[in-house]
Length: 322
Ligand SMILES: NC(=O)c1ccc[n+]([C@@H]2O[C@H](COP(=O)([O-])OP(=O)(O)OC[C@H]3O[C@@H](n4cnc5c(N)ncnc54)[C@H](O)[C@@H]3O)[C@@H](O)[C@H]2O)c1
Image (cartoon, rainbow, N blue to C red; front, side, top):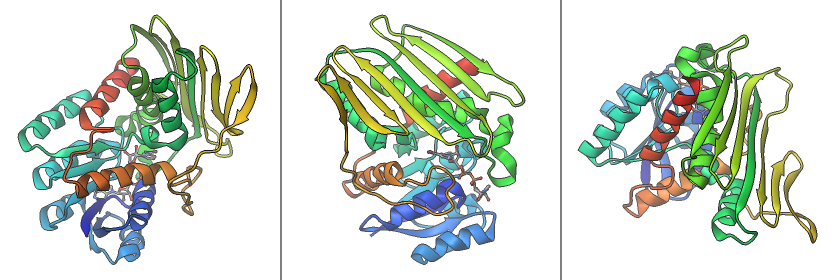
């Protein structure tokens, strides 16, 4: 049985605890949260021991892996302590608040040899996994242009930390990084890149970016400065030489000159979590944690969504903000 220590029992910790519960041979044996009721709610899922702070759990518990679901500004210190304690660590995205912290973690990784996976979950989201295979396989030719969009009502979190750009980095670092990370994963670094970040009402609340790769142009839009009832949206439209793939509220569609196909994917895991706001689908989170725990079981370090890539994504978005 793989023993997991879960740090942070808020929105993301709840998603992770439910996913671990569904993975065979894995048990969350310890949880930590400053809010006792949050920790108790997750502890009862797997009869886990409760700690009040992440550092206490790291110091006192002997586990196979640590999973950090804390607010972003707390990632670096906890990830460093975790890497010094166990062989494998999972850190939510964005991996660090600053580039400097990210570089420090890479140094700690070289020293400790710890495996690190970062919660760049879009790399594991079924519709985006399908898209990556289409891009790499070349069935419909090369990508000519692409558009990725992510829009959300304003998140809040523990003590309103999301609303403070000094803690979350705003929509640019927190939300838009999902699509930037996927763009870098799918296409590599662009030749040139232009970005506008809006600060209306709140820092870094809207980002529009255009990346020029020479043979294709990629547009990425992200915002969380939207009213509470605005439906969360993740969207892409990718134009290949001989087809268009589109993922929207209406599902996944593939347009060719032969017509339009409603693509139905077989998902590894279909479950919802109550009270998880508008991202209640656990599928992508399950896929990333299944991969993380499978790597652990096989004695391998996770490579998909590893630390170096995650730090590159933070660098990219920090450049946009600057
Ligand atoms: N991958 C995704 O799709 C996704 C979605 C949402 C959030 N996130 C990321 O997940 C991370 C957590 O976000 P969230 O939405 O769960 O936040 P949250 O505010 O819901 O939860 C954070 C929890 O950490 C606890 N906490 C704070 N300091 C602590 C400490 N020192 N020790 C123990 N517990 C402590 C708080 O009490 C709170 O319960 C962030 O980095 C965020 O960017 C990722």
